[in-house]
Amino acid sequence: MAPARRTLLTGSITFVVGLALWLFGSDEQVFIFTPSKVGVVLMVIGGMEALYGAYKSARGDGVARG
Image 1 (cartoon, rainbow, N blue to C red):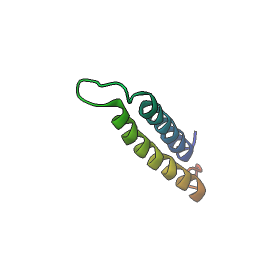
Image 2: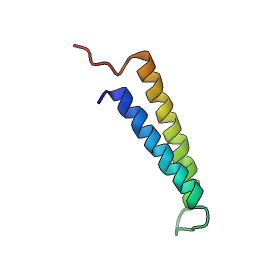
Image 3: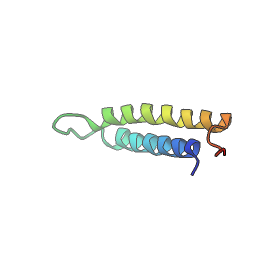
Image 4: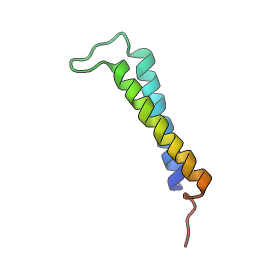
């Protein structure tokens, strides 16, 4: 798999996991953290990574050269 596609895929998965934590973890309280707040952080990180992967694939950095 090309690096740009892998970055886009992992960013999307991270965003979806963060979204699930944000939606379904608001009622829970773990000892140290709140899952909904961790979900927001994961959504931001995943969104940034997915945008970077989209940028890399549009720029053509994911193409193998040699």
